[in-house]
Image (tube, rainbow over the protein chains, first blue to last red):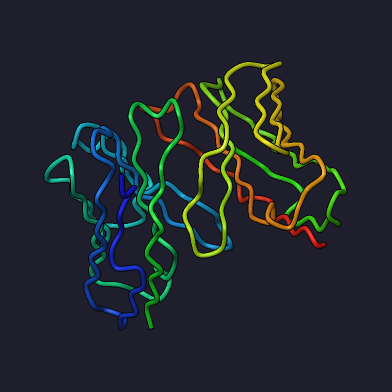
Length: 113
Length: 112
């Protein structure tokens, strides 16, 4: 298995632009999580899906952030418009019921200038 | 509010010098405590899950233990390849589904 695949690995964009991050979870996993990691705040849960349905989006910082999971093999996290304070590493993770821990992707390092 | 606090923030050891990392948690109820390892530029990698006080898990030079208020990750005779950031996470009882709350991690550096 190729693991959780995220793209792009790095993204540099100008303030105000739209950014779309992509994630392909491990086949057979029924939960998908988006986390954001910064030095100051560590890993923060943004949103998570179970069986493609958003269960908890209370961590989404503002209406500028949105996430979708149109099918079991694909999810996107969109920021529109982007701001410099959105600069962070964004991780996607998947699991099957979560009992054995998540499998994380390699992350997308987002820089908004 | 559910919280996870890890200490120390950073730890420097000589090769072979054993030590422990601490994870203190405050939750309404615990459905599991998780340890992860994160190397620079990579996503966290799952190490252990602990479910009840008194439980222990081992993997090579690492041993995780759990009490009702904290968990320890003991590192015995560490090697330079053990250098990484170690993250602790909890799944609270009142947390819907399977989402985890993470601590900020302990960055371990082992020199030869």
